[in-house]
Amino acid sequence: MLAITINLIHNSDRYKKVAKYTYVTKIVSYIVLFVLLVVNFALFIGKTSLLKKVEELNLQYQTFLTANSKLTTSTAKVAYSYTKLQKIKEVVASSPQYYQQYEYLLSTVLAESDVQIEDLSFDGKNGSTLRISSTSMDEILSVLGRIEEEVGKKTFTKISLSSFQMNDIKDEQTKMYTASFTFQFTNIFNENSI
Amino acid sequence: MSKVLGVSIYENDIVFMRLSNDTKPYSIDKVIHFENKIPHFFEQITKAKSKETTQALNIIRDTLKKEGMNELEAHIVLPDHTSSTQILSLPLITEKEIISAIELQADEFIPYPIEKATYDYQVLSVDKAKSSMSVLVAVMLKELVNSIEGFILDLGLYPLSVEPVTTSFYRLLFGQYMKQQENVILFLNIDNRSTQASIINLSQQLLLMTYSFSIGNDFFLRGIQSYQNIGEKDASDQFMKISEDSKMQAIAKSLFSEFSKEIRKIFLSSTEKIGTAPKTIIIYSQYLNAFQWLFTNEEASILPQATLINFEEMKKSGVIKLDPAIKSEELLLYFPAFTTCLQ
Image (cartoon, rainbow over all chains, first blue to last red; front, side, top):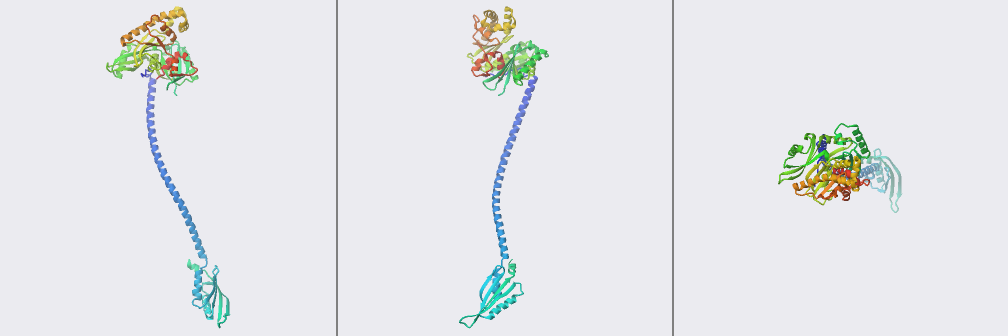
């Protein structure tokens, strides 16, 4: 199709000016478009890289969160265990040292005396009662002697002979001597053990 | 959808047509007609603004603003008698040489020095075998073009193009907006002062010949005025209604014999130069019906049947779409305003 393009104002000053402005505007718009494209591309690249970074950080964050969660549980457990341990230590520290007290009574108080332990009890407050019997008065006395030796030492705060009995044994020409003692231990064993 | 304004300026009328020319159908939604109150418009417009010119300009500008037709880009079309349209046959030359050739040959077809003129050209065809080319040239007085541009700017519009009626019609014909059976046609634009004839090969999209003769509507109107001793307005009305008035028919026929002599010359020239005569005549004139009657009723005529240019046909073929308020039969005067927007 033949397109007729005759235009008699294309030579006028105004038309030339408008054409010049249009041309400049066109060129400027191309440049702006190009710049926008470049900026857009750069932004796209930047955005992609940032997204990737954010994704990595997110992943890292999730890992940290999980680790933190595990750590918190462990910390709690450790804290709990530590508290428990402290309590135990406290309890152990504050509770009477029955074994030492028992050992002490056997090795130091009774030693090698030929006596029978009729009753031995600990009251949980460093108090202890011991009832021994023997057919030999001397044996009872040896125990009593050792107890006396202990007086003045820092092992007991109080020692008392709560009863002494002498009974005849049937069908035998011998006598049975029974002595009951009450001891109040100091905290000497606890202090030594801590 | 962008809208443009087609402006057609005649001696007695100025018409505006608003349309969207992006895609078919071209939607025409508003038309305005003004009686041109500026006497001898094309002479007056180049001079300093008179009181009448300023008044007329203000009325048009205010009306356009009121109708929402201001601040639009405008294509302007002027009558053929304000310009000269020629086809130059040139050897194969460069763009610069075409300009020199036009300036050298200008005195053959314009009655003023080329320095006072503004022109535009378009290479229509190139024949490498014959090392020749044909160039369409339109020339107009620079002063007039600048004044028209200023006038349009004063109306609050932005002029995009100025061209004569005939080149705007070439756009219509080459654009194949009209159904046409024949390949070679004669297009006649009967202006007030002259007639521009163009022979066109539609199938090959070639503008073969242009010819101008100084018989136009005014020739008929003045003849009727002097025969009847009546005023211009009455003569115009009677010429319009020629088919109903036998006395007018006799007067017009005698005047038409002068007109048809020129047409016969064109046919003869066409046969000599291009070896064929047009098979169809397409006419555009403000007195279209009168010329159709004259062509149809010419006695012992060798002229082929004349075809009319009309909006109704284009509306039916889907080229244009009219606002319901616009009647196609009232748009004859607006045709150049439409064709100049087909770019």
